[in-house]
Image (cartoon, rainbow, N blue to C red; front, side, top):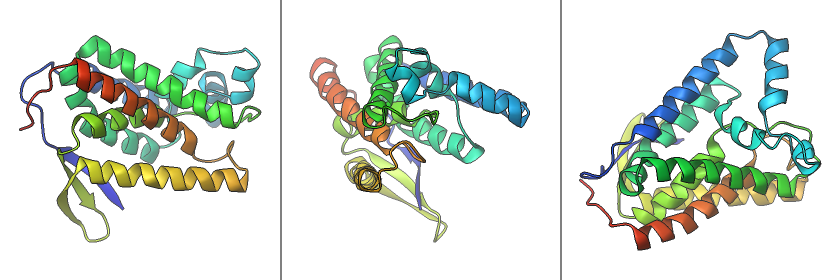
Length: 221
């Protein structure tokens, strides 16, 4: 498996206050989750996770946001926060702190709604920041396609650089293949919300095109 562990950094721009604050907030909330007993945790997830059947019936719209800050396991959290740490700061450096926060939340909402559109009757709560982070990656591939992403190859315990265009292009291809498989298997409401990733990424691509047109692009180091 390949994990991103670094990238070319923007020279100047806004400090990534929001990006790093989101990481801290997600970790703190997960620590709170971990302190609960199984019964209380299940009730907590059912209350704050985004359940498609409830959203489509006009209930609990707040979970479209609260669900972004919940995670199901340490590996779920670490994987998401690693991607957020690598890809978010350059975007925030260009578009600014407030606009990045709005973009991040909107990306997460669009991602959740994409999943809900395809699994409207599911009673399984959706949790995790991956939809919003997918939007970050979609914007990144448009704004910084030539950025060098340093990836760690677990099998051979080594690292190397790859252009963001290729790394993120391969990533979204995997999501689309898995998403299409979930359609064929009719298991959209179970397991990984692949279409939330796809919807978030598509939103990020559109946002990236807008940012690239309207914001002065800074130099990569």
